[in-house]
Each structure stands twice: as structure tokens, then as C-alpha cells.
Image (cartoon, rainbow, N blue to C red):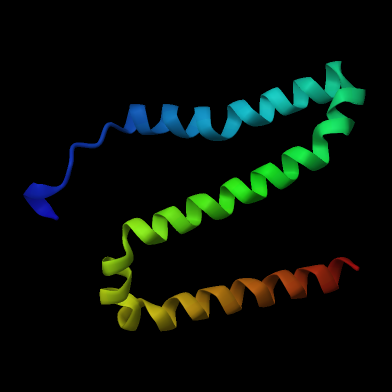
Length: 99
């Protein structure tokens, strides 16, 4: 990367992350507080929409960096598999402990 790395403003990045994560949660909590009947009615539809959008975003990210992914799959494959399996095992153990 070095000199070809883009300039990164920490303030702009933090603000963008705030807008993308905290603001929807605040809006959802306000909606649930002030219009609970409406919130209950649209909850399943919005959950389905959120799931579809999440999958589309992941697929778009993979597609946009497909060649980079293919070039590095041998390097990162085992590490990603280990991370995935360890987090699933951690979740399973925590769920068992809390049950």
C-alpha cells in the first residue's frame, strides 16, 4: 500500500459508522416506543428485507474483489476456516453454559 494508500479521515469514518449502525437502531427503538402496533406489523417484513440486503451486500463485496479473493484464498483459507470454526464452537459452548 504505502504511498498508493488513500487518505483516511478518522472523523469521517467514525461519523459514517455512527450513521450506518446507531441511527437505524435509534429509529427502530423510537418506532417501537411510539408506534408498537405498526412496529409489530412490519417487523417480519423488515427482517426479511434486512436479510436480503445483507446477502446482496456480501455478494457484491465478493464480486467486486473476486480476483483478489482468488489470489489470496490459499493464504487466508485456513485462517478463515479456523476463525469460523472457533467462533461457532465458542457460541455453542456459551449457549450450552447458559442453558
